[in-house]
Amino acid sequence: MSKRLPQHFPVELSIVIPLLNEAESLPELTRWIHRVLAQHGLTYEVILIDDGSTDDSWAVIEELAATDTHLRGIRFNRNYGKSAALNVGFKETTGRVVCTMDADLQDSPEELPELYRMITEDGLDLVSGWKKKRFDPLSKTIPTKLFNGATRWISGINLHDFNCGLKSYDSRVVKSIEVYGEMHRYIPVIAKWAGFRRIGEKVVQHQERKYGTTKFGLERFVYGFLDLMSITFVSRFRRRPMHFFGALGSVSFLLGMLIALWLMVDKVWHSWHNVATRAVTDQPLFFLALVAVIVGVQLFLAGFLAEMVQLNGDNRNDYLVKERLNLK
Image 1: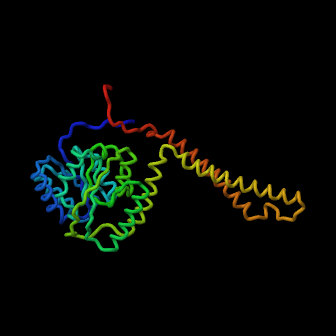
Image 2 (image 1 turned 90 degrees about the vertical axis):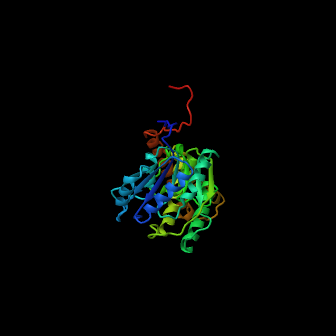
Image 3 (image 1 turned 135 degrees about the horizontal axis):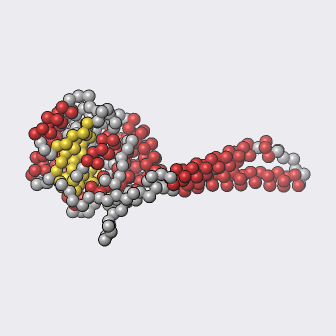
């Protein structure tokens, strides 16, 4: 089913902030946001998503929301992860532009007006922050550079910092995509495959962490690489899985058959000329050919079954319609 997107917005800017155990930073962060946006005359809302905090984060959110009508809060029953928090927050936004940022004060609210302008005036669909100068240890910055390089190469999106939490979006983007698992790192990739290709970048200030400790370890880079493979495959072949499995299966099947045929022709030729040679079934190459044929058939059947699942799925004709003209 195609999606109709709202044309009128109650506020100009929605700010989605996922958080986990950030009670100390929330009062300072919300005051900073209010000061910056009030100076620029922007109407806004802040949606704070408590991702299963075990400290006093929710109590702080309740206290802040009681005196600030710009604030809205969502509390998860347990920790589901940043992707889940962003996905739920995106559904609740009502602004023309949606910005995301972290709650640890390492993302500066001073960047928000320019991120808003780049969407509304420059016509970009998505703007990703680039923390060109970072205050992180080498154990974090070096894997980050490798991760970003691999993502640029695979996705074809020329961004330096895919994982930066400070981003801005046209509202159509966040209302049209779904973020799940650990895919928050790849929102630019998801947006591109959804047809939002006007993706820009802005150098942003990276602050030193003032309170608490980071919630992410080195394992995120391993998971990140696997997620990149997953999102690349799903984005390209979700609606045509036979193109992937069928192509691989056909190549494997034909290669196995050609090897087997060559072995048989070679055996016949040697027999015709009375040259002693091993039996076809005694040659290791025969078994490799047999494996290639079996794998080819299995891949082809996997593609066929995937096509059947896709054909019977509820979202088989779920396409994003950008505009409608004179239609009821």
